[in-house]
Image (tube, rainbow, N blue to C red; front, side, top):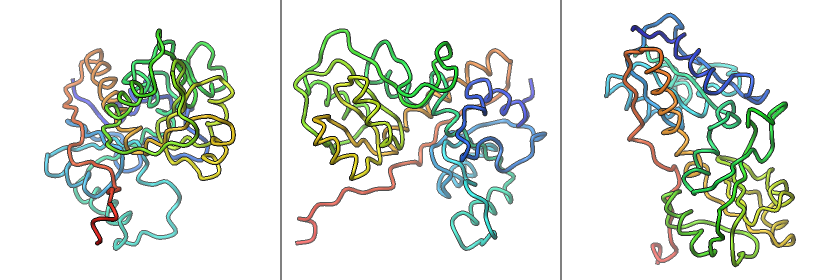
Length: 275
């Protein structure tokens, strides 16, 4: 059956209800027409010009990004800025742009669940449950465990593989064994003390504040700073699978694609490169 933008929005609301989004967030249809027909989706983390160009080059008509392309109100639309250029290009090419951000962070089987599952955790539950979340398992971050303890080395091998990273930052003492793991995909510095309070052996997130790292050293708690991109990247593949299952149930004629142009915006450099 034919699919329209409004159908995609209704489907996403089943997967990640809008009411789960934080009050400061901006989710849903940010550019486009609810009545426009949709033939293909491209899923990516960031509403970047390169992602938009990928959609244009692949003939895709609708973008679903995790981070919103319109986050705060614009006092003006300056087309020489990246934000203005993105809006202009999307409008010219009639590409719908939808954001599924903190609603997917908090949703059951959402952003942090994707990371927890890849790490092989069991008995996964929200680290900070949302209102009335006891049955729905919604909320920020996740905490889970292993049936048998892993050594720190074994665990970090899993972390490096899952995050597809060669280098990571850690703060606090390294535990000899790890059974209970807390995590939050994306920016989760503010959940570190809750992870510690729930007896996690280690906490994985990103954008860890300096003050949080210092606190971790004093508290004797190990924190892994896994980068925003790497800790959230697995979530978009999960969202794609959710949409595919829903599309089969609804009989949607829809092609779903994952971004191939995305990569971390940071580059690791070494001092020896400048000798």
